[in-house]
Amino acid sequence: MTEDARPEVAAWNGLVDALRSAGDKLAADTAGLAPAEQADGFRALVRALSNQLSRFEADRERPELMPFNGWRHKFLMDNPDFRYWVTEVRGDRAYRIRGNRGDASYMSVTVYRRTGGIGAEATARIDSDTIRFDDDGAFEIVLGGTAPGAGDRLELPEKAGVVWVRFFHDDVARDEMGWCSIEPVVEPPVPPSIDAARLASSLDSLAATTSMLPTIFEMSTKDDLDPPNVLRHWSEMAGGAVFTEPGIHYVRGGWQLGPGEALVVEGDVVECRYWNILAYSRFLNSLDFRYRTVSYTGTTATVVDGRYRFVVAAEDPCGSGDWIDSEGRDFGIIVMRFLQPADAPPLPSARVVRLDELRGE
Image (cartoon, one colour):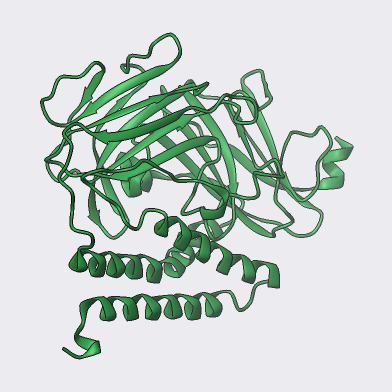
């Protein structure tokens, strides 16, 4: 067998080619941007690759719940107000999830089936309305199978492939963080030390996703730029598309600001289980939540007479509203999430103003 005919060699070369192709497209797409934005595009590409590599050797017989949204591996609209874990499973197996919610105000476990590419459809879920917790916040959930268990049960429908666990936090800076783990109900047999065919298939999948990323960045921001500074209902995310939480109503829009300008976002709070607002780059990474104020929740936001007011700007508007630090970016994206709203949230207003005018107010 020649080197080119070996499946692992072909798959590896395909990954290398995909990285080169993605880099070339990203370089071309960002040619007109400022140097910091150009570099940020490649950082987003590396973070996405890191995210995928952290789950590369998925073992569906003995899965692990892997943290998803660490700052080093942000990937396609991460959310630092949530804690996520994700794993791959088999629909014909049974598993047990144990954990503790900590101070999370809400949590959910959602099962998805893949629909092609990065697409997905939620097929089963359970949330903290029905999960039984002990006095310390601990829980246990059996996934699939018929084995008895001490906790709750969630079915694994046919073609189930991916499980996400989400903890929603009101204030991640002060809340106690929870944890979760997964294990098979029945001890699986010892697998082969390596499955060559599966390795090649996994490399192919990694290459395919990586090669799509620059196009995803480009296409995802089109509506945010045409026109900018307007928020819209983001209905494409309904039903668990691309592994989203099915019960969330999304509102989204992009800002386009010049030096000394700010975007003021105002609206009425809608009755819901949870809501937050968060700023992203054009490359669908959350902004620097470690050192900057880039998000608020219904608990940390200032709500006056049932209304919120956020100011997206490079500088603190000094009391003119809750400041979302734009990091000085002339373009970025705002996303609002409303969990199980009683009605469709009314779209907030958005207007561009001068920072000195805000301070004058």
